[in-house]
Amino acid sequence: MSEAACHVEPADGSLATLQLLMSPQVHAAQGGPIELIETHMSWVVLDAQQALKLKKPLWHPPLRDCRTLAGREQDARAELRLNRRLAPDVYLGLLAVQCDDGRLTLWPESALPAPGRTVDWVVCMRRLPAALMLDRLMADKCLQPAQMEALALTLSRFYQQAVPASISAQALVDRFRHEQLRNRQVLAAPRFGLTAQALPALDWLDRAIEQHARLLGLRVQQCHFVDGHGDLRPEHVCLIDPPVVIDGMSSNDELRQVDPFEELVALALACEHQGAAWAGELLLARCSQRLDDQPDPALLQIYRASRALLRARLAVAHLLDAAPTRAAHWLALGRVFIALARRPASLTAPSLPPRPA
Image (cartoon, rainbow, N blue to C red; front, side, top):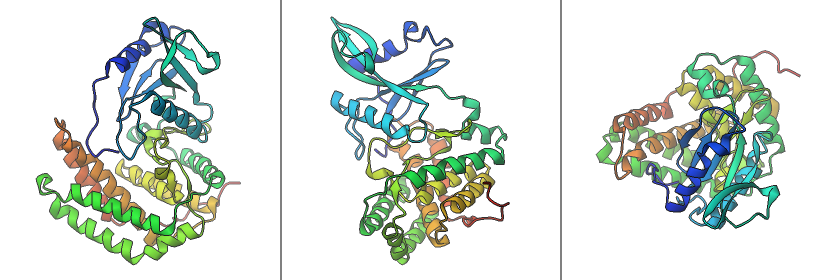
């Protein structure tokens, strides 16, 4: 993904499609107000029951090139297929945007062929209750241990069934080194005033990667890497019964080649950032039990530091935009995650009651 924050005005074709998706007639059967959310790579239109996601006509290497209709269709199909693994009842299907004599209409893929030609594709999702998203529950101080127990069960089953990844041990170590170079380019740049704080964390992780390169490689050789979620964050977790996880990485297959514990540590780090460190500790412990896997604490600390520095880099990279906004906010967030990269944390299983049957 590009290091710069992404905000674009819709091109003419996308603007017309976006206007269609926000038109009242599209949402007449669903009810409720119509809302628009912009992410880095998509526009999402919400009503009371559904979410309609339209890919932006952009290319941010190393993600899939979505500037063409074929690229956006491929990305939409990948999103549907991959996210049904962890949210089977949420991803409802694809809608084709048809243009017939200058008029745009939406057609379910099952109803094709339809009059006109397909000019875009939309992912149709069931809207999830905002109050049960993990980030909201933590912000409202309402998160319960039973909800994290249920999430641990869902994720453990997912990782047990996931397809093994094809990454090599050398490619994994090289990936960590490459990410460190990118971290250093941004976080140690004098223009951001973070060098004194960032360098100790960057240097520590450099040393840890070289010292434990064999440990990293062993995780690959012992077949612990799988085709995972790729973007496990609190805002992607909904703690309904059973829990679902949405918005997996569909635009780059390599970014989903992960050790489950790298993703779990990233989610635990986000929980700690939101004042619920206990939730991440419980999640790690339960998944360790259910997967019968206890990675070396040194490895988990590498995962933690690398994910924290990545979050810091992505925050600070907003200032690389041509017209950055909220500069103080992004710098402050970068400082927080740089500090978290080296903060001691419990990354081994705490004392818990026996695992539920």
